[in-house]
Image 1 (cartoon, rainbow, N blue to C red):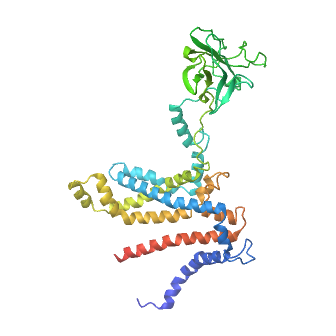
Image 2: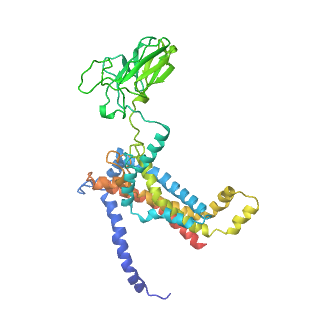
Image 3: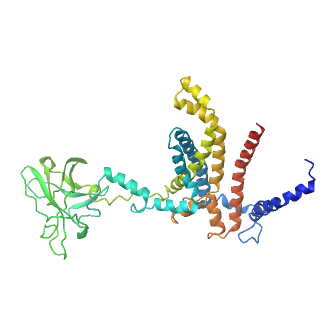
Length: 426
């Protein structure tokens, strides 16, 4: 172009100064700092890197980062591809794309706060558990008497699984009463009736299930006293040799009736009578905290993937798709053999971009994961912060983690640069 070298250098100087100050110097200083101890006064060589690969918390972060890289970009790209292809054929596709892309306008901080509330354990606050509890309660009824138990030294004894079984066998003509305690008076069902003794029967096993307690603490243990309430809806099973031979449910007055074949069996109150109210899934517990945070990240970035893939899809020659359909290919074959191969360059761009993003993930994990399970959701970027400034006060180890993150990102960046150069030559 005939431009003098010093003129070109003069124009490039501001950019080079900024690049050196904001990129080159921090990288160089981080590499240098990783070779020194916690306070930077003593040279330790590669000892900090040895700590990185021997510390349990840091190894957990490495494992979680591997899960993030393998799962999060793949799921987000797959969802983006599905959304882009499906919305291409509907009249309201633009509105749908706008809704899916909208989370990208939310900061990571705001998204973390939103999903911390979504995953709240309390179904009255957490949307996820509100849905789970609603579905559960549709198919399974909760016990009316959570926490109920027999009196100590009574005939009912605890058995495996949370049930209670009588020590003596049931007999025809004798009342097999089943007294329980441990239920506050204000927790009894509305309209609970006075318990009544069951009438003996010559062809059945009968008895009463009731709350063996009345206000004031008066009354006789094991006897149905005035003011003691019946426990209706309690399931009673007759068990012989481990097999349930008969079952019944107590009525409003607490009485139940089992057929004659229950004679000689032991009476069991199954655990379903006493289970507490179902409170949903512990989304932020040790086993689910990482998948839950990944789901929140996918919610944010699926829209990004969809927009890029939709842009690539707009450039796919329609005549190829129509020709394939004319030749008898089904929609799945057209999608798998034509659409996806033609979109491969775009899919690679999306995957590489998202992989670089998840390698640096920090905000969502730090905000969403509770303190008691943060170590289970730990990732390298979060561990870098914790080691350097969040209580570890060891900037040597933190710098070593930063160097490792840089080394993990470099291959992906080099691959991306080479791919872009190949496309430019085309």
